[in-house]
Amino acid sequence: MFFSENERTVLKYWVGSWAAVCVASCLFTVLTFLIDSSRFRYPERPIVFLSVCYLIVGCAYVAGLGAGDLVACREPFQSHIKIGRMQMLSTITQGHRQSTLCTVLFMALYFCCMAAFAWWACLALAWFLAAGLKWGHEAIENRSHLFHLVAWAIPAVQTIFVLALGKVE
Image (cartoon, rainbow, N blue to C red):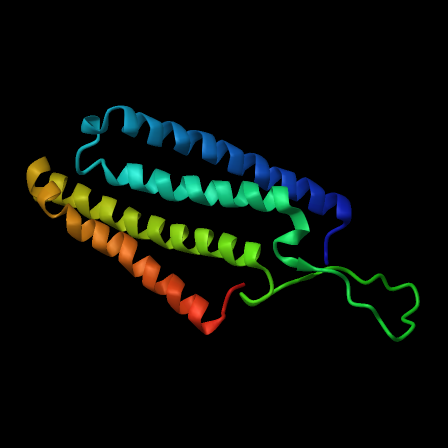
């Protein structure tokens, strides 16, 4: 609304370009892990899960760029009153009942961003255990199920609550 059409187009492609770079770099990390998973032991392994999260976030941004206004915009309102030279613009749709594509992209973005934040915390904790408390790889790996529980379950519950309350934005 505050930017010209040209500025919005430049910003869309700017964000889309960086999202494509994110997808490429995260895909490289994930493929490297899939080729030889034994190279990534704890405390480094959360980096792989961070890459998976950001790979999905990047794909969601690229998909949003490809879908354009179909994802989160509604057509301009038809004014019944003659407003003069004022131009009616598309508006952002809020609420998960408006667009299935919007809801799917929201779920991917929200869940993966929250999971990435949790994996950052798990990575910091794993490094603290390894460097600060001198835990070995095996000791950290024995507790890795707790990392997965925290990093995947809490964002899943948050996403379900947001969808249940209809607060998709």
